[in-house]
Length: 601
Image (cartoon, rainbow, N blue to C red; front, side, top):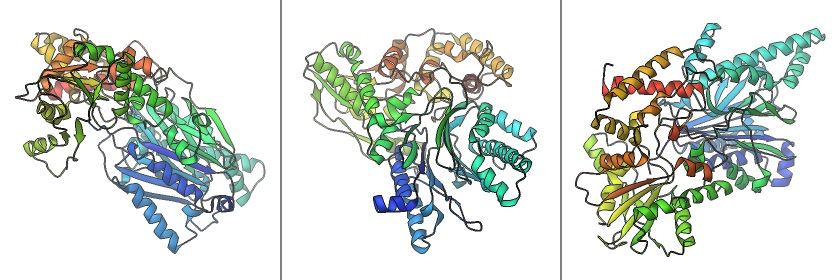
């Protein structure tokens, strides 16, 4: 319902045969470029603020371009980029991207608030030595970019931009320079001169060395992808597995993408054909096409993002489809209680579109209990909110009409309405639109169901919810504290967060210690889930609404039963996988008290 900007999408392709092989077999020398287009379009859901591609032509001669990059902003960026390439190729059939063997693509959603073409991936670091050219893109958010920036400046560097992508590029580029210099010395010691040294360097770069001296500096969730001018290709995943990556290899191609069904559809493969890149692991394709998997960081506890399964990833994935159905079916007992077991006088529906599969799970669950359920498409997404409306009252009035309802789909004052969404984050759309339009149908009761648990904590690994006050569950808990005269709890949590934020300014990455605690969890401890649910309803109920409303959330246990391989649940539980996440949530509470509540404690 409330569209979240989130994890970006990545795509890598390495052609393993000469270009004329693809021309003869598939009828086109643009096989790699066409497949990159498909991989990016199939991941369009992962980024609509911008897109970019890069490629490397291994056969380019000195004096001609061998590394190509193209970027664009906006939801039509993919179409714009490939349109430019097509136009340029008509004029110059020797355009590097048409004749390349290595391809990289990126779909961008910003979680930092920064906009402009300079922030669109891939990022390119140029050099006259082919091996020192580095192009980088990623699905990532780093929690300790301040510390990495300080590290770079202490080494004498002066990054041109302050952003995690640029700083990552500069740090990795610095380590790539050291790797090339190591090989230069090695070649000289063996008596090589001139171009012989260059050929030696280009064919002996060990990207594993670069990654092992770069990635330990970072705290966060990431899949980092890159190309070098000499023909190295790589992707590395964070040691907790927070961000996803899948790959496929045969004798023609190596491909990697953020989602498994994207590769399946693009290359007509079975689920079992595709492998998951493991946490802390890098996929490295050498200049000669040799693929190897290398451990860059020791694998940590499983914190694969469960929101990928609930909401972000395509539901066409075999496992995700079944998991979302199970998330819905598990809610049947709670829904039965909410409607007093009156299935006969209950209409079931969902909020388009991501909650649809969980809705099927609910209806399957009722049918297993031998109930005939009444299904209606009650809610329609009618228009998009136009951002040129800036005045608050006008904007809220327009927001109220983003959704519409099917009139006459239930019997007024007699039928309950059960309606499911995948998540309830801020509650804005419920308050401004959904509850208002559902009230027009005059159901006996509205049961608003979420296939995910209450979202209580910000995310710092790639989802655009970084402020506590945005979350309706947090606002409800604070309201209960204030109503019950428990303000001392806010003061105690603030003091601990303030002390913790200061004490761990120079924390050790990947190492937990007793000083790293999420003190914000104490805000929720005095209250039951039902108490917070009731307060959320009270806060989100529009003025004048008559229909009773009850919220039903997924349980944490239910989430883990449905998605057993994806235990990352920090936005629900506050159990952050990295030190940086803990530090930032404590800082978020300090900022909330000082900037929103404006208290001096």
